[in-house]
Image (tube, rainbow, N blue to C red; front, side, top):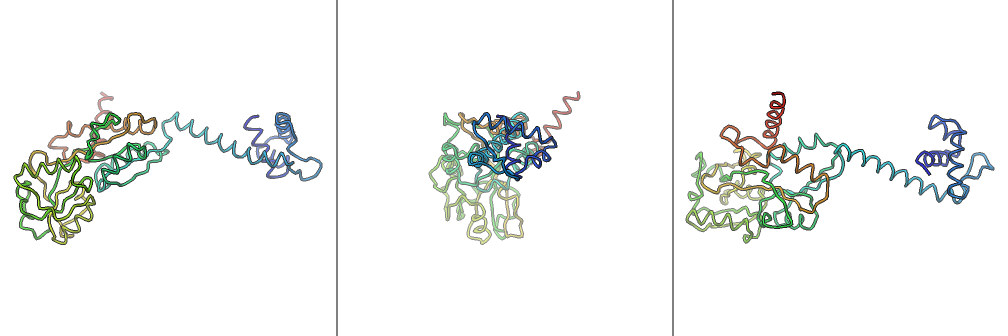
Length: 333
């Protein structure tokens, strides 16, 4: 049994004519008839009742038609997958990301990657850090982009890379007494009602402990009015002048002062968050290996090491393009 025999059989069965089947493949009727007879000999039963015109399928032929179509479909899928795998352009990738990160410059890198791997289906899932960690370990995601609020770096089942080091900003309403400042320290927010952005909405995660320690080092315990992992809800409360907040700067990039919001960079040691890309060490998905390799090649995971005063404001996508341009220039040299 071969692919052509199945194709000729399906065409003849659907058209109820050997002549019409031959016309579909631009071959002679004799060739179609011979291949179908070979198929019948292999199966040990007739597939067509040839005593009438047009021809009809026998009961065996009707049963085999359904199977033949399924076999051809599976063969086509296998061919596509094999071809895709040979060019590195097939498969799927499930990426979980922390709430708000859709506003970051990392989307530039994702766009670049998708343009180079158009046949790779990448799906995205917006979650809290707790959900991301559980989803990764539960094999719901191939890779996650997250604050390490659950200390995944120490989990022996997980590999990780630094995706981005993000500065923190104070989110104030436009009429706040500090709204005209160029820079702020955490200490200067003492006594303010804090609308706290938590990595996990629990106030007791590994990430929360890190941020609470920053308040402790600033000399006070924060007056937390409300806790959420949803930056949009937090900013609505700030705009309503209910309090102030501290957020990663990517949460501020798509908001304007017209929304009664002002964002001021925080200065001081530790006033940044690390966003990591994490995946399971036992993962077998070739698409994941491609994605991680692209991260390594792009240098996105080395932002902390390669940032300079001139490029500190670049997005990962721009950094990727600049590194690629530099690599090509070195190759020409």
